[in-house]
Every structure is written in C-alpha cells, then in structure tokens.
Image 1: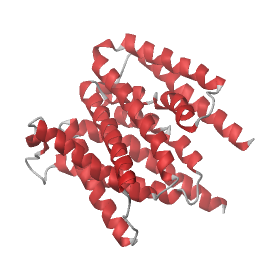
Image 2: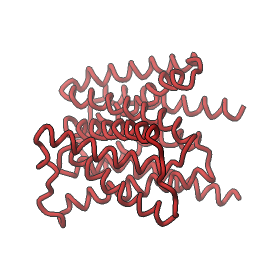
Image 3: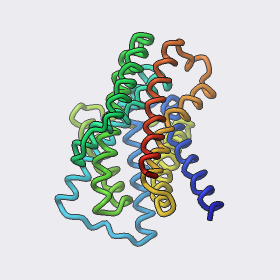
Image 4: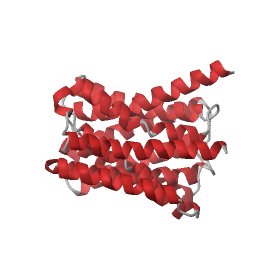
Length: 294
C-alpha cells in the first residue's frame, strides 16, 4: 500500500514538474501570448473530447452550467495570456516569482466564496508576500510590466482555482475542463476578429520546432497533466494535490536557470523577495497540513 502511495506521489510531483516546464515552453515559443493560449486550448479541448468519447462520458449540460463554465474558460484564458505575456515582457524568474502570490489571493478569495473567516496566520503570511513583492519591485523595476502581468496572472489563477473548486463538486472535472477549453478558444477568436488580429494565429511552418513546442504545451502540459491529476484524485486527497502544486514556481525557476542560464540570473534583493514569498507558501502548506492532521 505504501509502495503504491509513493508511486502516486512521484506521479504527482512529475505533473508539478510539467507545470513548471510550461514557463520554459513559453520562453521558447515565438508566437504572441494570445496565439500560444489559443493553440494550447484548441489542442487540449481536442484531446479531451477524444478522452471523453473513449470513456463514453456524457457531455450534456444545461444553459446555466454552460454560462458558468464559459466564464471559467475566460478566466483561465486570461490567466494563461497574462502569464505568457509576463514572460515575454520580463523573464521566467520574475513571472513565476509573482505567480507565487496566487496563494496570497486564495487566502482572501476562499473566505469570500466559502463563507469562512480569514485565519490570523494567513494575514501574517500575506504581509510576508507583500514585503517580498515590494523587494522584487524595487530590485527589478525595469521589469515592471512583467511584475504587474505576473501578479494579474496569479490573481486569475487563484480566482479560477476557487471557482473551479465550487463547480467540480457538482459535475465531472473532465467535462467542465472541456467546456472551459472550448469557450476559451471561442472568446479569444472573437477578440481577435474584432481587433482584426486573427492573422496572429498563423504559424508559418507547422513542422517547425515552434509548433512542436505548442503541441507539447497543449497535449502533455495541459490535456495529459489535467487528466492525470484527476486520475490521481482517486488515490491522493484534493488537499494534498493543491498543496503540492504550490511547488510549481520552484520547479519552474530551477528549470529556467538550467535552460537559459545567465538570462535568468537576478539580483540578490530579488532572491530575498522570492525567498519571502516562497517561505509564506511553504509555511502555509505546513500549517494547513498540520491542522488537517489534527
């Protein structure tokens, strides 16, 4: 039994590693952030529908559900667009450092949607995050656009996570994701048509490395990662899965240093700020895990 649990936790950390690798792919792909997300969601929705048909799952939903899932699709699209644009405007380290603030937003959004009180230690850890962001802001002001986009991405990710958590209680997670992916593609397409930028979706050579990276992003890093995480929920609690995914920025920044070296090396003050933000995340993980056991 313990051997099986270890196997599932290793699988979970592999999925978090994949999540961290999305930032590396975002740096490698030369398309615009909007184009990246459009292709990502199109590939993910196509593969997800194949999985649903293979498993003979129902896709039936009512209008109210469709509107809710479509709204979530817009939120996750905004999260990914701001994330990849943040990398474009700064680099992986800055964007992931700001993305780490998602736990800070969640600590305030969860009480709002789940009608629970804000816990005292969450306020203290929140202040730690604010200090960390302030240090990074001062040290890397030349990356101000990337910092703002990274924080926006963290907010959208947190909002999506909280709202999606509510929806999954009442319907299949894979079915919800399919409608989210499809609605994201539709919203982005409408936006590009109205702004007359539909040509930005064009990829000159579909056999190029650029498209290979996009396919890996949509298939391995999105469709597979999500379906696998849903599968792991049979063996690992949702609570443990969420806590483990908080390690994504650590994996991502280490991968960025490995792949891009000097381009990802930041000032000493940046790493102090990053340390404070990640410390708040890890302390929050430890405290919640301890309280959960109690």
